[in-house]
Image 1 (cartoon, rainbow, N blue to C red):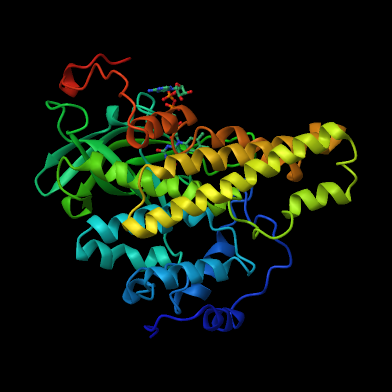
Image 2 (cartoon, rainbow, N blue to C red):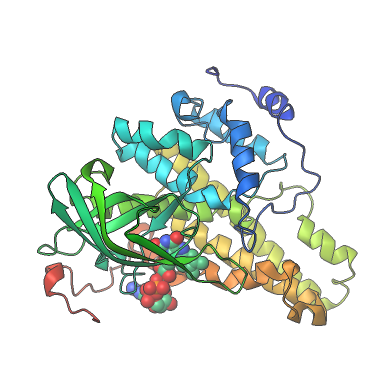
Amino acid sequence: MPSESLTAGEIHAALDQLLDHRDSDASGTVLGAGSDDLAAGRQFLQLLFEGGWMVPAWPTQYGGRDADAGEVTRIANALADYEVADLYPYGVGLNLVGPILLDRGSVEQQDLWLRSIADGSEIWCQMFSEPDAGSDLANAGLRANRDGGDWILTGSKVWTSRGAYARWGMCLARTDASVVKHRGLTMFAIDMMSPAVEVRPLEQINGDRHFTEVFVSGARVPDSNRIGDLGDGWSLTVEMLAHERATIGGRAFGGGDDGDQGLPSWLEEWRAAGCLSGPVARQRAMRALILHRVNQLTVARNAANTSASGAPGPEGSGAKLRSVAAFKARAYLGKDMAGSAGMLSGEGHVEFLTAPSMSIRGGTDEVQRNIVAERILGLPAEPRVDKYTAYADLKKSR
Ligand SMILES: Cc1cc2nc3c(=O)[nH]c(=O)nc-3n(C[C@H](O)[C@H](O)[C@H](O)COP(=O)(O)OP(=O)(O)OC[C@H]3O[C@@H](n4cnc5c(N)ncnc54)[C@H](O)[C@@H]3O)c2cc1C
């Protein structure tokens, strides 16, 4: 099995045997929008599994290769040169749940779930948001009551991406309503195939059909599926969200789709199509390019910080903000450049139709700015009137 830290040349030589080279620097995915193609991603993950190329930092027995930080970076850079399947359906497992299980899960939980995440055989979703808990996520009210060695979960979640095809859900639940809202939460892995779990689709304007609301009616969950300690759900949530923002504020949003040489492919395409002949169009295109470059630099700085500290921090919120701004500028301008055809809905407009959601998913722009203000710039925290009140005594909308 692989163990030595490989050079970039050795990594490319190994990947040449498995993958086709990319013929352009175009973004490989719009976060799965409208496609929900599970087979291509699973095949891709299985291809990379034995060499540990997809999750190189993970232990070898779980589908990684015990790579050090330098090798992880070299592999990520090398993979950018090849055709990569759309891995959006597998994103929660690979980028959020895997790192959490490695950091906070028991050995039994790691043995049970990590390999099936790495080879794509099991998909995970993130069950955090509720009708009364979005930006104010600590207000989550889905209940988990103890019943012998099990827990009985009851309540509902909403905006659950990938819920339509997930096998497991990482579910934030209220285990103690008598303490303040941040302290009475616990994280569970819930079996989405349980008859007590009902998944209802919510179709988005970009064609996504994996988006769902989930109703949980007395689902029995063994205590062995509790992730982390009892009452420790908030710290796991914060850690998972930091991973999510670091992931969104990165390549998947087009953050690093081209090198710092030349122009990105979308700008070349606009030029070749004659869209940049007028001064106003050129001005807007330059604004989109500047946002793109600023995003690349912010993403690189965030990645360097994460690599140095060993875990993603609040800088991911800044990276997410920059990535969203760059993505939206490109998507809206791309629609305008298409002229009257830009008003017709079609495959080419998936980016335009996906763009508004970017400012909401993974935490809204306003919430990211609050994090940057309070945790990076050290500005005064906004008032939190419910900080010292037990969850049970808080005013609820229903
Ligand atoms: C495409 C998409 C995919 C998603 N996928 C998932 C998923 O897989 N799992 C999951 O659990 N959730 C998911 N979400 C939910 C997402 O995390 C929430 O929608 C988001 O956190 C906002 O919560 P909310 O919708 O309840 O809005 P609210 O929290 O009600 O916010 C409403 C408005 O008020 C603003 N606001 C709220 N609080 C503050 C504040 N303190 N300061 C300033 N402004 C504030 C917000 O910025 C927003 O503009 C997804 C959402 C989208 C759009």
